[in-house]
Amino acid sequence: MSAALLIDLVKGVAVGIVIALPVGPVGVLCVRRTLVEGPMFGFISGLGAATADTIFGVIAGFGLTIVRDFMLRYQDWFGAAGGVFLLVVGIKALRQHGDAEPEPMAEEPLLAAYVSTFALTITNPITILAFAAIFAKVGVSETGGYLDTGALVAGVFCGSLLWWLGLSFGIAGLRRAFGTVRLAWLNRISGAILVLSGLALLAAALATLTGLA
Image 1: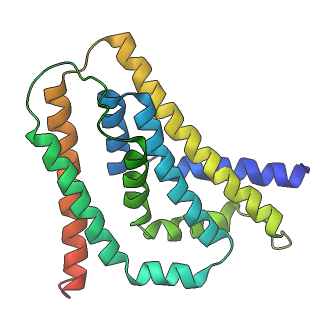
Image 2: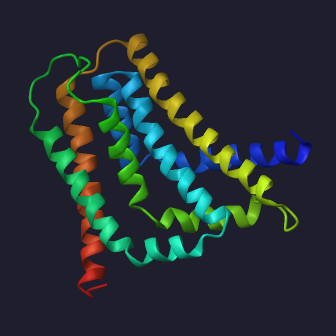
């Protein structure tokens, strides 16, 4: 790998971490799944988000304006769908009672954990604009070709994946170091955050769709 491609790869890693870093609803889901179902479920959930981030990176990096414009045109519908999903997950968490120590649950397949966070992340097309703005500052040079852009996008995936890997297994390590986590409090806190996030997304989407905003 040439020095220029390596630099683009490192830039992409930094961009991937910056994009994944904010602790939003996806982060709450990953933390919850790590504590309740184990670090692998948290990591696979993060992998879904990293895949969606990479798709956004491809759209922004390669200038796929048709895809970008389509997603932005229907962003309110995507936001409404994401809001409903968060509401369902949050209400389910709030309805779970008990104060026992969390145990891994085998009934939720890993594929479902991956698909849910992928869908939640991909329904936020505003991320494309964030990628476009960041790529404009740290992206490849004007003389760069497809290989340079490809290295940048590959770095985005690696950076996002590194963040979710560190988050899921780091939290699992803290749990082992500091002892038990009470399931009742975990349900209340994570459920409340997810419900509020879902209501905010749904309200913003409906306000725009109905012409109130």
